[in-house]
Each structure stands twice: as structure tokens, then as C-alpha cells.
Image 1 (cartoon, rainbow, N blue to C red):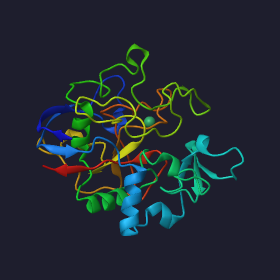
Image 2 (cartoon, rainbow, N blue to C red; image 1 turned 90 degrees about the horizontal axis):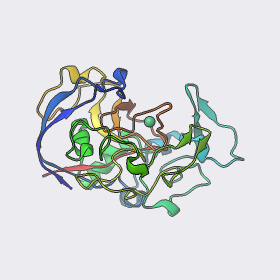
Image 3 (tube, rainbow, N blue to C red; image 1 turned 90 degrees about the vertical axis):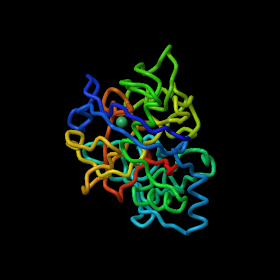
Length: 278
Ligand SMILES: [Cu+2]
């Protein structure tokens, strides 16, 4: 989908912002036009990429990835958890092709976003497709859908008129997800209405890799025109939040929210979409 170039106010210093993530200061950004995929890259598309190129992902090389505990079968063997986030389990055999571990498969979710893909894997896919990852600024501009100073791609209300507009957690995290939005884990990439730019699931469902290195202090001195992130770093920017976000512990299901991960990391709630030059 073509996104016309223009100016927008990037960032957020409102009451829901995470100051330590560097969501602020709000600053003017000017972008050239670009084209962005209307959805995240699907399992079907990634299957084609791997069939053509024999690409091996980082999770496949390492032999494991992080899976949300609630997505594992009850009888699943003991796995190592993450100290600060015990709901993440290190699962051997979890890869893009086996998102819930070796007993699972993507055959029943070909229209869902590919997950367990690292930043390196996303880069490789984009190169093959003749595209690239969005910059963080492009991602936020696209996610805002033409709206100004709003939390979500559709406005400021999480559930306008009681309607669910994205795939996030409802209920008591991590014990109970009422699935009021219709989904426990990932949803099909086209689920939920698109934003003003015709883009689906910019928030919720899965986090999306951006091309930038991450620095929480970046906005204080970032260039106004087409900012592309710090020149170096240790982690790459992720945007949009995921099916695990809930206000009780993570409000990063907003257009201005930021986080990051190392370029070879993968999890079951992290994917990407591509942009192309126009
Ligand atoms: Cu979150």
C-alpha cells in the first residue's frame, strides 16, 4: 500500500507512555513516500521463500526458540523459563515451521504471521523479495493511519463501543485469556479492520521488526528527515505489541510504543512486514 510522504509527530509523552523505552520526546519527522505491505509476512509466504532458497533461520540453527507457556500442550516436557518472564519457555524444536514445538505445524495457519524469525531472518526474506524492513519512523507513520496524537491505529479507545480492534490479551495475564477478541495466540494477518492506510494489525497480533538499531535516547537528537536510527547498537527495534499485551503488565500495543531485541533472537510473538521503495 502506498503511503504518501509527509510530516508527522512521532513519539508519545502521554500518561500511557513508557518513559524508559524512549517513547518521547514527541518530535517532527518528515518522510518520503514508500509502499508497505498491508499485512505481516505470512507462513505461506515464508514457506515459499524457504522452498526457493533453502534458507535456514537462526532458531533452526540454535535448535530452539521461545514459546508462550499457554500455547504448549499440558503434557509438554519441562522447559527452561525466563527469570523475569516465566511465561516464556525455551522450547527445543520450536521454529517458524513448528511454532509450538516439534509436534506443531504451520499447515493449519498458513495465513497467520510467520513467527520465530530473527531480525537476520527478516532481512534475508526482504532481500529475496526485493524489499526491505521499514524504518521505525516509517512503521509509526504507517501505523498511525493518518491520525494525529492517537494511541491506536483507529483512535484513542482500546475497545471502541465494546468492539475489539486488535488481537491482544483479555483477562488475567498469564493465567486466563478470555479470548474476547476471538484469538488466543496469533490471528490471521488480515483479521480485524485495516487502519486509514489500509494496513491490518499494525498493533496486536505480533511484534514487527524494524530496520533501526534501538536507543531509548534516540528521539532527543534524531534527524527530522527520514530518520533511520542510530548508527550502531546491540538490539533492533520492534513495534506494535502482540497477542500477549495487556494493560496489567505491558501497554506496548500502541502506535508509539517501542521495544527491541538482539538481531538473532526469535519468539513466538514476533514477525515482520516489508516495505518497498516507490
Ligand atoms: Cu506487550
